[in-house]
Length: 116
Image (tube, rainbow, N blue to C red; front, side, top):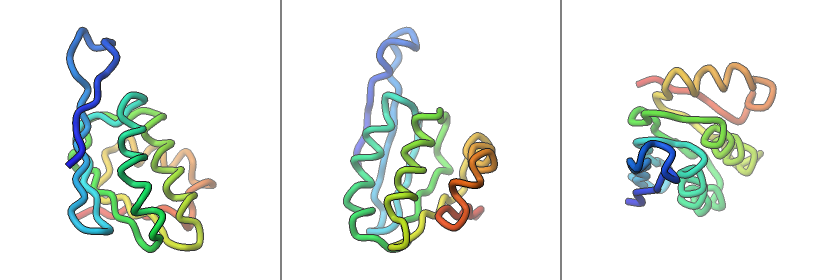
């Protein structure tokens, strides 16, 4: 498990936290805050999975917050997979679903949303 990223002091000294667990070679569970401070951690964790190609599932049910930086990582993963695979977002929070709807032209055919 990869965890713990600082929030740069913006939340009054509290720590922004992101837990990334690789449950299976193609299933990654993400919990906590996915923002500009923690997005690089997720990108690093996903890099080897993306390199292998195929379907990559990211379970977002435990995601508490997400900002544009976090969403950009997911778009980058989907783009990097290209024709070699696809990105499946499992149980994304409303914020992610809204971002996907707003960027539908960029994600059609490379991002799938699944609700369990």
